[in-house]
Length: 281
Ligand code: NAD
Image (cartoon, rainbow, N blue to C red; front, top):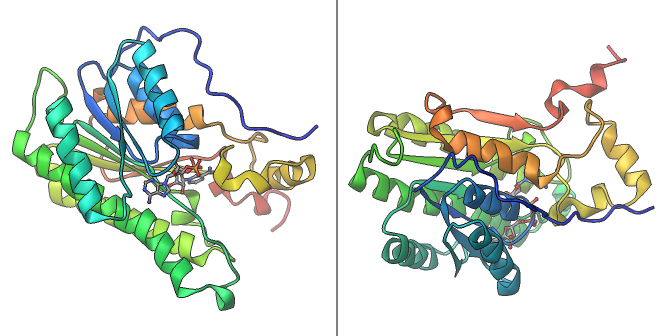
């Protein structure tokens, strides 16, 4: 039987409101990991801006699920690689929610090709969304965090940024050079911002997903043959689900993770453990 995308089904509303009273923005929040993260933050008590670039119906469905459990949600269309649109999105968020406490820089794309066939357009598209998009959103968030400072009633940090990176910030990836370069860039951008703004009590971290079942990598899990091949790279022998990332994101954004700054949390079933060495070497 072929694999299919799972529904994000959350039948009951969790009682643990780790992010009560916080305001969050998730980019690319109408699909895959971003969708699950936006719902997870909402269920944890945060009011959430659900950013999307296309398919407003999917963004509205995410908002409805967040509102069902008592948080506010607002869908805002913006291309994260466009400075004017990003600034307009943050302005609308400030007008509606008043401030921002958590930014999840999630939007990302792949445009794959063998290196000698990789076009400048494919290179620039991926760098524009995956790296420049994260820069533009992080800059707006940091401006607001520094302006507002710590509000102890809400969180002991002045703000939290979580960058959705990848195992490919450290694992080279043939045929995906633009993508790996963008995620390697995210790693040092995240660490450098974290170093710069830590004195303001702003925390900046990344999550490095391994293989997660979403539309971005459908060919890697869709057929039983592809799934079996993928499992050669995953010691834990199951694909990750978007909710695996969402649960960790909620925790990393919360005060429970207050002393964590400038690091990448890999959520990959052991993909970064060099599984090729298990019986070889
Ligand atoms: P996805 O394709 O389901 O979601 C990507 C989202 O980004 C979509 O909502 C899309 O509309 C949005 N997006 C694309 N371009 C945009 C733009 N210019 N402005 C605003 N939004 C834009 O894929 P996903 O797997 O959920 O990917 C989410 C993030 O996780 C990406 O950064 C991806 O690199 C990362 N990631 C995914 C995996 C995986 O196995 N699925 C592994 C490692 C990292």
